[in-house]
Length: 317
Image (cartoon, rainbow, N blue to C red; front, side, top):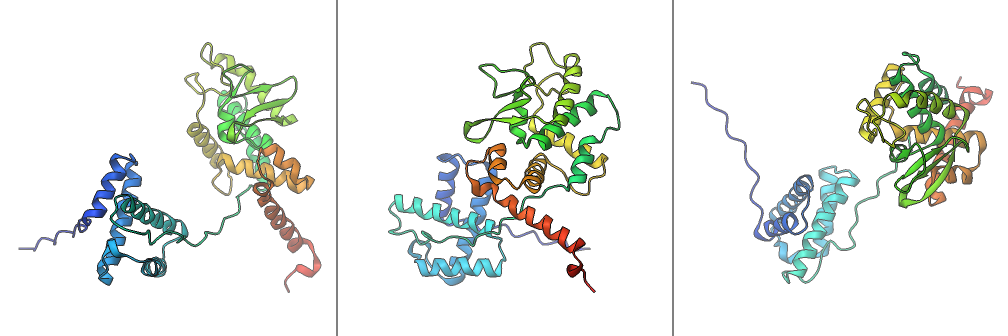
């Protein structure tokens, strides 16, 4: 008779103060289930460290706390973001223990995870962006006209997807944003509830006019949204992402395309052509110039590729 496999070992129960803190996070702080799972995993790691070194958690001192963090970073090869989540849970635990008068100090105060390298935003090549915008397998089919309008507003105007979703046909007290065809502008509500005007280029205006010619037959009566779906209501961000993904795949794009990639492409291509960082900042609606400066690195990458491809001294023998 074949022996049945041994049952998997269940995680050891959390020590009383750790379990009490997790209950506090669930009941008082009302953390989401996923967040509670992250906290529970972090507390189990803390308990394992204490058991391994024979340390009482209520008597933990900063030097030992630093050693545990360094050891986990090295042995478990945790990424900076994972380390930050871990340390945040541990600091929260000891902050709560302090309020409960169970500890006198927080051994994790001032202890920070290593900084994660910020990846550069990904942008399409100019030819790919143009190909995506002009791709029209169905010609004047409403779906294709709508998709082209979406691409032209994201790439041609540098809109965030939330700004695009919030656009109405015309200005009103309830409108987050609207289209001004006469002025060839989009009025959008950006981050921090800041309004800005974004110019509509020739291609974006043409795509808008094509869509507006078809929209009355698709929108529900009284629907204020500029972009509407099959049921006649306002398109949401998930729908726009799905439509853009499908269009990019059909158009043969070399990478996954999402709305913010088109915003990155708008900024990168505009900076390559104009070199005017302040203008790009204004068009994107960035509060600080440092946020926009990341595109100068993309611009340098583009110039470096041109140099490597064209300069006789850059060619490898």
